[in-house]
Structures are given as structure tokens and as C-alpha cells.
Length: 128
Image (cartoon, rainbow, N blue to C red; front, side, top):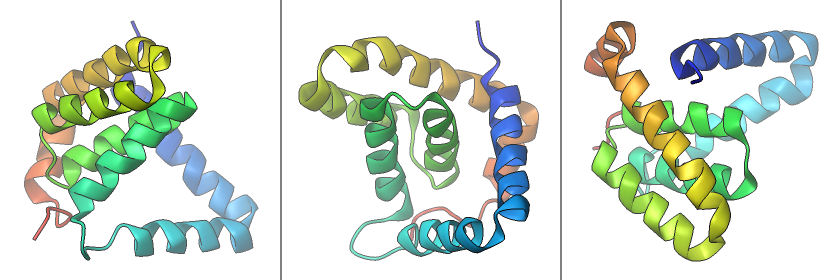
């Protein structure tokens, strides 16, 4: 079984390294991500659920881990993630049967991690 808490930390470290190594495009992508994540007609949690569904459809495990964490930090619940996976299944079929359970395992591991829980308690990303 994968340790998704460790994977998340590794991906976040890799993201920082990439932004240092490729600063122009890396910073540009960071700005794009930040801008797209801001509240508007959709809440940040809803936007992260869309991103998570796309990550599952694209079969990008590192994207799944990061967007599962971001969805939780933005205030999405495990039940909302399950519902989003149901819609993803409707649109992409079989791959969601493979990757959907991984996302639920990611949720469970992240929510069980005390360090992640403290981040959730202090996040300013929750929907307004």
C-alpha cells in the first residue's frame, strides 16, 4: 500500500525544485494555479473537486494526491469526493474503478495524519 502522505510531501518538494530549476514557466504555472483556485462563481472546494475528477480521468496519480489534499484543505468532505468520483465514473468509466479507490485511500490517509489535520484546522482556503 502506498503512503500518500509521504507521496504528497515528495510531490510538493518536487514542485518547489521544479519552480527553482525552471523559474519562468514554473512561476507562471504557480500563478495560473493560484488564480484559477480563487473563489468566484465556484468555491475553491468545487474547483478542486473538478481538478480531482480530471486527474482521475487523466490517470495522473501525483495530480490525484495533490488535488485530494487541496480539496480537503479547501473544505471538501470525503462524501463530496465520493460523489465527484461517481460523476467521474459516469464520464470516464473503467479507469475510475481503478483510481477511485486510490483517491479514497488518499483521503483516509491524509485525514488520519495529525500533521495534515493541523493544516486543515488552520487553512485559509476554506470556501466562503
